Amino acid sequence: TDFTETTRDVVVIGAGAAGLTAANELRKAGLSVAVLEARDRVGGRLWTDVIDGAMLEIGGQWVSPDQDALKETIAELGLETYSRYREGDSVYVGPSGEMSRFTGEMFPVAPETEAVIDELTQRLDAMVAEIDPDQPWAHPNAAEWDTISWDAWLRQQTDDDEAVRNLAFATGSAMLTKPTHTFSLLQSLLMAASAGSYSNLVDADFILDKRVVGGLQQVPVLLAERLGDDVFLGQPVRTLEWSDAGVRAVADGMSVRARAAVVALAPVLYNRISFVPALPRRQHQMHQHISMGFVIKVHAVYDRPFWREQGLSGTAFSPYEVCHEAYDNTNHGDERGTLVGFVSDQQADDVFTLSAEERKTRILESLSHYYGPEALDPVVYYESDWGSEEWTRGAYAASFDLGGLHRYGADLRSPVGPIRFACSDMAGAGYQHVDGAIRMGRLAAADILAQVRS
Ligand code: FDA
Image 1 (spheres, rainbow, N blue to C red):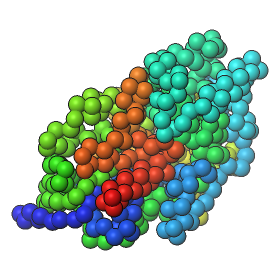
Image 2 (image 1 turned 180 degrees about the vertical axis):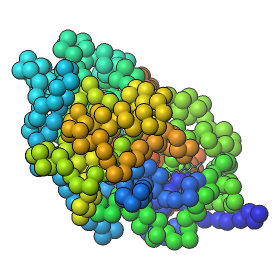
Image 3 (image 1 turned 90 degrees about the vertical axis):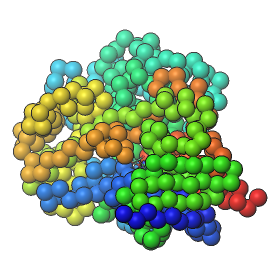
Image 4 (image 1 turned 180 degrees about the horizontal axis):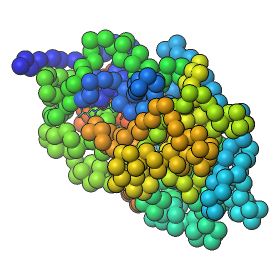
């Protein structure tokens, strides 16, 4: 088969939100680009598909009010947003397995537990306010906070198990999607700081505010359209040769020579590329301490949003359930009702030891604890399984394991010769979100432009 050799000013590796943003910024500034994408589609962790007749957002979908970079991009692309359905009561399942309704952010727990959650939330907000999400390692307590696990720190503060579980899951199962003993207090504070505060993170009306009509994957799809023939699909980059003079990216069917490269992959995939010469010692070490979280996004579509008839918003939480959180995820203008639930970290490992049929039963049973028996019979059922995707390997995103953030964090964005790295998983604001991917894409492009113009 034909192998094409081409030359551009910059080669961008990865057509996710970060890579496509970088490529567009560089093109706007007058540089020529080529984007090489491993998959046969653009968007990476943003992917809208039709499954058994239902339009589902298999990857990222929500937009929150602080995500200015994403909001600017959505507006600039002419996309419309709509609010998540949120009329009515939320539900909570406590340690006894009993469902109770509530409104607002505080779970319906015993008054003593509520007091503990309140007090610790205030303390966490104060700690988060001291953290610069672009450099959490610069905090005077960074080493101390990065060498104790999130779980251990919480358990030092209180022996109220229900309070610990509810506080833990906002950054644990719900965000970093790793067991809370595997990442640090500092990592948890970074997650909260990247969204403005710990309180913002636990406020579903904030963090899961809006969706894009037609799906969030339209952001990368439209960004790619602007680049036209400069986006090459099905071209996994296998080798990246680099020197002060520039780079040569070698994919399966083509190679691109350029003055600079933007490597816009999840950091856990860097070692899929042979760097020639090898990356420096620091990168070799650092990249081994970053790992992907793991969560199953479960989609259940019903002939109608039946929970609304019971006065339920669809919002549901429980640190005791297989599905630790679930929401009304009905598409804009759709008569059918969709629920989305999340099964995270250890729970996700556990259900993947079951057969597909048993797993579905277990997960739907968990949903029925929130919404009643009607939840057991969806017309469409689908599990987003990003752990099986070769070019992602988990969900939602990558983070440092215990102790890595203060040890290596400052070097994660450092360029290596003509190579820049960009990904949501190294962002400050918008960390692990599309907003952060866009910010990192912009930053990589700005760095390259500054160098080119100097
Ligand atoms: P991303 O991983 O998207 O892109 C990297 C690209 O590089 C991919 O297209 C990949 O195929 C490609 N690639 C990898 N190796 C390659 C190689 N060797 N050569 C060429 N190409 C290569 N965020 C949010 O804001 N709101 C939300 O609601 C959610 N929810 C959510 C749910 C689920 C299930 C997931 C998986 C994720 C989310 N997220 C989210 C997170 C959000 O989707 C994510 O942070 C960004 O889309 C990441 O964009 P990047 O461009 O940084 O990486």
